[in-house]
Image 1 (cartoon, rainbow, N blue to C red):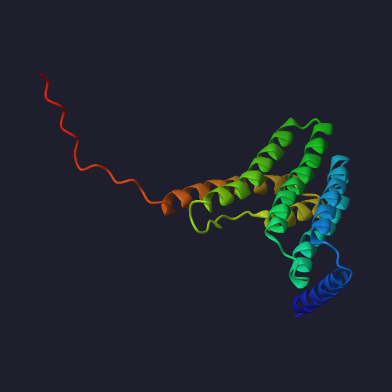
Image 2: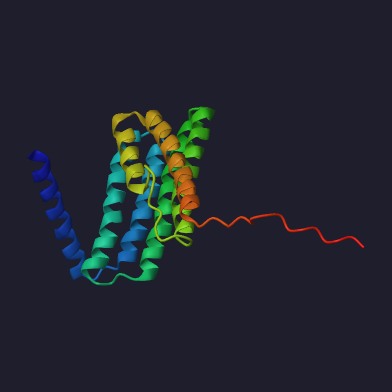
Length: 206
């Protein structure tokens, strides 16, 4: 099928880029940092209302987001700090891109959508936080509909199609639904405190 051919071609191109970067010993953390710089570019485009170009720039930022992990794997340079650094920078990238939309709707004097983007930011940040906090208590907490890859794909679709407002509603609802879903899942997984069988007897009065 055509989709399989496109997928294989894309993987071959990505593997070729990874091999070249590994050959030149490019540090994966540099690729991660480059990705966040490109996110500033995407936010700039969004802020000035260039939603289509902003969507294209997010695709470029996503490419670097894929490259850093693959280069670390191929060059066997993956570290715990690298994983931590990548996670933190991803949160910066999310907020930076969404701040561009805040500027755009503020320039349009659309207070409702400024608030809506703020709700999306809350969901984006707390989705990762609730998972990290939950997994300090339980083995795994990867439930919910909306994680970072889905957010990025939806923002790209919103920019390229000109339907950003509809995408923001989806992100606001499903992003925060994921947060509450993880809270509920963690509550269900944690052991409940045992209840006493009866009230303790009151001490005898003198």
